[in-house]
Length: 239
Image (cartoon, rainbow, N blue to C red; front, side, top):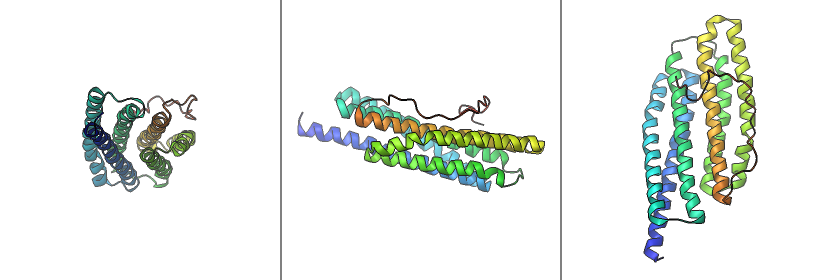
């Protein structure tokens, strides 16, 4: 392979990495802003989160198209092929994280005029803070190809599920104690489920990093502790 072709190919891979980095930055900001908007009932910030999702969608489509063209033109092998496939996978997870952050922002608009005790929101905020840490850590692990850090994120997924179960029971208790809390707490349940699903997508990215570095998929089941079985709270439900 000529030096010109190798350089061009390296440039293609660098472009994919830069686009993934941009997507990661947008997804992180969207999640942080959605959480802040929820705590503060900030409708302006919520609208900004909703608007930011369009850029994330565009980037995901561009990455997928460029990766497919790269495979067709360059016919990469081994690590180069895995890096191209991994870019498609990670961009898909980041796009879904943006969708879930947008869903939380839409819930903020729905509850902005409701007056409930702030303590009800604190559990969702705490869960969101932990998942934001997971997202940051897994994006750093992807950038540095750090399998150990990726495994650490992967192992933390069970703790997020356990926290969601606890929050689920707490919100149900608020609803049973006072029917006036039902509407507000139902919206919070959807927000909590969206946060939990973002955690699942960070775990997906961690598994992709393992595949990228080793060429193998993780042979063990991920740690799951979600026992809520609350059928109406699903990541596809949106608002």
